[in-house]
Image 1 (cartoon, rainbow, N blue to C red):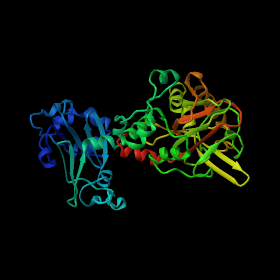
Image 2 (spheres, rainbow, N blue to C red):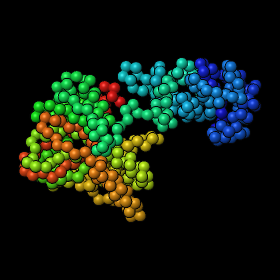
Image 3 (cartoon, rainbow, N blue to C red):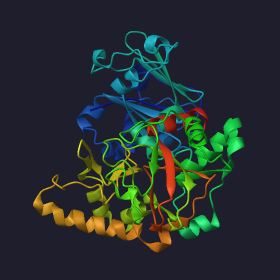
Length: 438
């Protein structure tokens, strides 16, 4: 690896290698520490040069000067761009592959047109400039590429470490919910106005659950609330489901027993993203609903028991749903993380009842896995993290199934009847993006 060029851009400043070769010794000396950090071979560094003409900027202070826009250094296979205090390492093949100008993109469909495997693996830019918040590159074939600096900051591995999401989840326990309860929306407003739909989606993203109040006590109204977000997901339960105590399915939910908090659909490789439900008939006594913020519990585990967090986020665990003529399985870690450097939480696949045989780890690791599960469950079952409430007819509950765990207390009487729908996570998130919620 060697350094090809160094440039600093308070406006538009870029110099060619030939112009820079005349005065490099002083700058090379002043940048020794930086270059050692980049692990650049000295013999290669000395055989190259980088830009030393900076308008009104002294060479020996180039890296220390506060730059209003950006500075960059060209290396053999990548560009190092410093912007807003963040160093972005931009591979040249990656840059050419992510060009969205000219014939690199289908401007009618928005689809990429670059054939990634045909890009020269040794490609290098002919010219690089930064002007008005845009990185501009000319490639050997004459193609011009432009990249917004903020776009690069938000869409690169290093940049994502520093750029926060537009909507951060509010990690809650019972006390936090009491102090800052999630807002609810009336059914008529939700159905008539995208602004109120966006409010519900915002609440779902922030808290992991939301309420739509004063709804008609019908499955049609529950379906209407669901389809305002996306199409419903049909499973072996059907397009919709009813939970009663008739033991219609081989599931503890179809009894009067208490249900510990859990995630639905752990027996699918991709569990449903959203649960939309309404209480149609209450039991004679009991049947109180329970929610727990799985992300909050996972972050506590990460903070207090990082080793256990690593175990639960790396070991795949099988789950199943089993009936005489049905056997579905889903496999994934208890704590699933988003890809990328920030290791953000993605899904909590937690269900004691649906877990299948743990045959995915060797005997030597089994003890560590159970110890991690015990610690995680301690936070999940901590009474201070539990939100109990009585769901009433006319009140529709939406739960982000990948984050918030749900359960209920035992009840008496056979009249309790809860019905609802599952929605895919991808479509739920798509709707949130279209409405500018995320």
